Image (cartoon, rainbow, N blue to C red; front, side):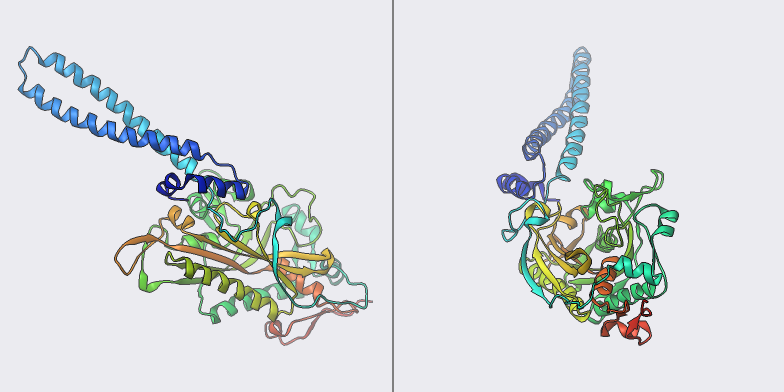
Length: 426
């Protein structure tokens, strides 16, 4: 969240930032509550001092005066109790409102309301030119017996699937290649829980506001299935003070991800593009509170994912995400969209985000600087590879006229040295 003092001192900028993101929040209510809170703190201090003095006066007073003094003190205690209760209510109201205030987007974030307003800043690779009628990943998957949507839905409902044979092997190959690539780049590998407490979802900025996209266990457990390993990885050092010398921390984790895809009824129902469960490799960086270092990390984690796509010979473009398509926590986000022939366009496969100290304030994730002062860390993350959308891109871009699929050179060691998957279709 944003620091309350920062909001009070920069109310106009906070309001403008929320407007740019098309997010509703009540900054005037926050300012009014903060004023009331500060006035109440002063009044409480004065009343407590009066009570302390009154106690001494009663002890020294004439016996005949003590009943009246005691009655006055009783009234003061009741007033104090009421004021303390109001103080707790104000703190709770402030916390609830502060959790809804979005991070202020960077000046470089373009104006816009939806993903259609995102601005392309880079494009790599030549789009495939087929001298045959290309098939979608769904058609190829069904023809080869690689994807079973019917049985997936029978087991788990709509937007679920089963990967069989070579498609399952290809999924594992993509994930392992992505993971190994990040370890080779100096990222520390992690295996993390995919069930997290609600406070962890709040800490990373997914709650409040994203509850309808999450799968939640019953109330007795207070646990949620994560939609990305970003959540447990970023929260790994929650409530800790890290040493300056140990930063930056760079982590990579693979996890199963779960998303309700609420609000997408009837959209992308065919195939693997929009599903409830998939595998993902995620990169997370935690570092000191320094704008230049955050910008450098943002460029680096974006480059990590671009290098992976180039290794897999997949055409893509990078877009600067507009204000209305940014989430609540991000300062700025770059999406990578990979070419998917069946969609006749680019589909989002990666999101590289930087947050400054927005997440770390919620998580109480701090470090002790070289000057000895304790500050909140900066955090960043980006997808390395999301299994289902990478499967779409690889299968569709590398398909052959006979229905087989070429395996990119980078994945061949993970596929037993094979160069092609599938038998020619008659």
